[in-house]
Amino acid sequence: MIRKGVAAVSVVLGLAGCAQHGQAPVQEWVLAPGYYLQSVGGHLDVLRAARPIDDWLNDPSTPEPLRRKLVLAQRLRAFASDVLALPDNASYTRYADLGRKAAVWNVVAAPNDGLTLRNWCYPFAGCQGYRGYYDEGQARAFAQTMPTDWDVAVYPVPAYSTLGWLNCAGGDPLLSTFIGYPEGELARIVFHELAHQVVHVPQDTVFNESFATAVERLGGELWLQQHGSEAARAEYAVFDARRQAFRELMRQTRQRLDKLYASGASAQGKSNGKVEILEAFRASYAGLKAAWGGYAGFDPWVAQANNALFAVQAAYDEQVPAFLALFEREGRNFNRFFDAVRALARQPHGERLAALRELIPANASGAVAPAHSSVSTRSM
Image 1: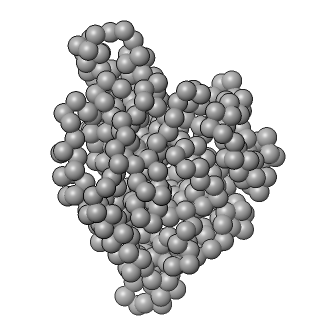
Image 2: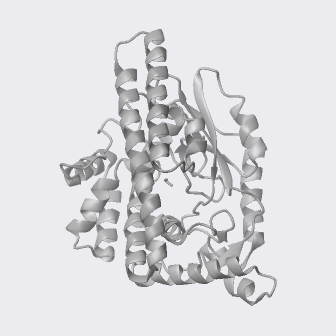
Image 3: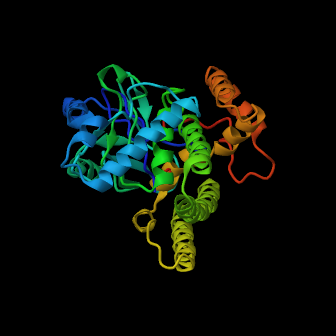
């Protein structure tokens, strides 16, 4: 489900938090030296594993399926800069085989009666709604230390961005954790991560992630229209329809949970209501899954669905309709679109939210977070 993230040099910024639904987030400074050592060491290991794509292509031992994906990635990288006006730099010109299923694992937590992510605060990086680890065991061990009255989740993140800060060191490499994605999804993840290098607003990752999600959607569809095979377009259409149906189910469930937690119900009433809402969510998902012929791609997310995961996913959805509307307003021109987004990024938080709200089409299912909200933060 949630697949991407942003990383700073000194801290794994695997994924950002979401809008805070009326509650002030609990904040905790991360001071343990060991955490920062694993963050720096983990990223250095990724950089050491990376080799130029041409080296892999010239190596006779490179498997043919990987070779084809790397050639495709080179084409996607050129398209990103030439057509989408995304940064033209060293990122995604190298490839690293990590030998594991995820680049990092994120720990997220929210109260068992709210959708406000717990924040961890880092020097330079600010406060974020997650803690990232390069080792799954360390992530799960930390999750076990969380208070029992919090919903906690650990999930894999296949890609993250260093925001262009490390292009002098070779940039962000393609990773084995996502290189095997279908063509449309590989395009989306590359375009998403490069979009983070266009604009980044500290401590407003709902803005950051929604913008990058809009870019990945626009860019992925444009790539398939211009260069995708009929088979690739058909494969993408099937998966994207499932993704949109599942996102809508999640959005509706978030709304029900948010309404419940904001009500005057007793603690027991909220607990009982939460159980009913999550049971209804799983029942509706079972219906979707049956209609999809048993497709189980979202099963891992559903298996641990809780307040923390619903809160995180909102970061990728809430402001996407506004950014898509802004793209249309700017004549579907990526350079003009990016300039307009940069102008929004320079505005104070409240003014930025107000401007985004004005862009939302009347029939859009997404919504911009209310002005009182704050942020600490595949997408499906």
